[in-house]
Length: 119
Image (cartoon, rainbow, N blue to C red; front, side, top):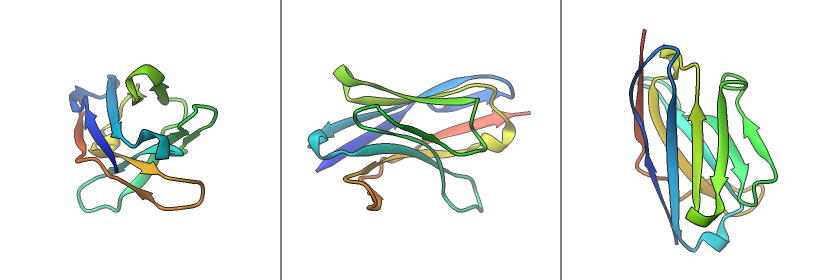
């Protein structure tokens, strides 16, 4: 099993920055990729950004390109989401999840961390 724990959310003004962390433990060798998703009230969960566990490839939703950066600290088994130029529409509960191999569903969802951007 892989366990993922998110942290780093909070309240920030529009234009501000936050860095989210997703700490992985357990069978980390079974991770192909980790991704960030978010879900705002009344909306469906959406993909935000992700990277392969070896760090070679990153992916971004169009809505966050140029503002968010996903990265990984190998020594800490932690994936980060640096969020800059935040907008009120970025307000959501942010989750990270694991992909065990390419073309399979994401699983091992964390509990989420709340990001609220005030205007």
